[in-house]
Image (cartoon, rainbow, N blue to C red; front, side, top):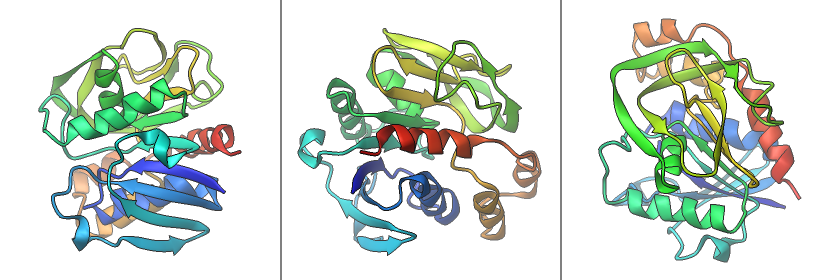
Length: 239
């Protein structure tokens, strides 16, 4: 069975966090998902184990070595925190990503995860003057089997990667964000600034929960094709 380690950094948001995780994991089913939450002081307030739609979820401590978990993939979600405003827990999350890249484990960084991955590997992340909440056309800069077919992405961020790490290839750009998608050359490691997991159902649920105001909801009205990216990544990782 496929085993995915997911840095679950939006656990406090039912739609974008838990709903987003379900969208990320759906293409892997049946699978085991190990949830890491280094940002939580007390994770006992959240469910520790459950099963849904062919995925078994288990919340665990961050390991000393990611290889001890023998994962088929490592994914880092978005977060309400900011890489440009570093917090101590980010050291543990960064270590997981660094170890995964070194071990040639397939990695996907999403939004905050993209920024953290790039920062960890020697890139630069800065805070933009303005925030972006939109569904935006993506421009393919270099051919890549995972990212090149994707045409539109849902963005919600203010931090952005201003310099890619050594060995990274730029693959996706937008008008507002130059480094919107990258791959580490010769490794199964990708980062994207947009949210491929933000499906229509996730957006609708976030709005219904009061976790998204009317202006944000309107900004995300247009469809995007992030689901294709998640499916392609899962196919690449599954044994």
